[in-house]
Amino acid sequence: MQKGEHLNTEDFIDNAAEKVTPEDEHRVLHDVNAKVKKLDHSNNSTIKELLQHVKLAFSMLKDKQYDLSWKSKTLLIAGLLYFILPSDLTPDFIPFVGYIDDAAVIAAIFKRLAHEVKSYETFLKKQ
Image (tube, rainbow, N blue to C red; front, side):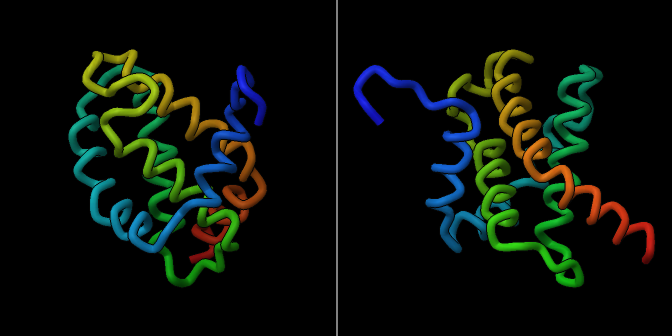
């Protein structure tokens, strides 16, 4: 990347996914539920949609019976890690606005993994 260039959302996500470590996965698996509980009471439609995606992504990661590709797994971990970190592009302590960037990152990952998400939802229905 050259000076003055900005990462688009997909490049940002790819860069984050390439750097995912086992410690990141552990942190996500340990911390996501607390963050979800903190926001679960919200009536805001953007936050509700964000939480639906977060819960599904978390379920995909935890499900040992579902064969999730490594690339998909790292993308989900990167997105969930972004979600749980309080000081990202727009800090979460700013009411509502603080979650817009989280929602954008998670939505971009879900768009990218649409086939995988659909496959997982079909897998869940068969169980």
